[in-house]
Image (cartoon, rainbow, N blue to C red; front, side, top):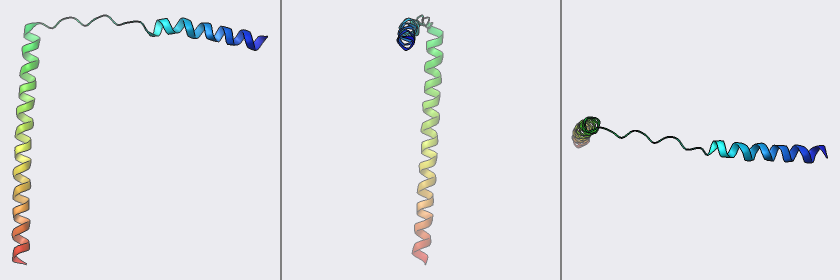
Amino acid sequence: MKKTLAFIFAGALIGASAGVLQAKLPPTPAKTDAEKKAEADKAAATKAKDASDLERATQKAVANYKRNMANKATK
């Protein structure tokens, strides 16, 4: 009998807490035009930096490859 009551009580607690756990958060406030522009500028700057880093890495890899191939040709 005590086990049955304990299971019923546990089920009631789980059922009650499920409603609380599924509560929705309030919506985020809308962004202003200035915030949108700043975010777009930051994304563009990041994209430009990534492109620059990729170009530099590509040039370094090509130079390394050419140097290694020249060393193999002389051996």
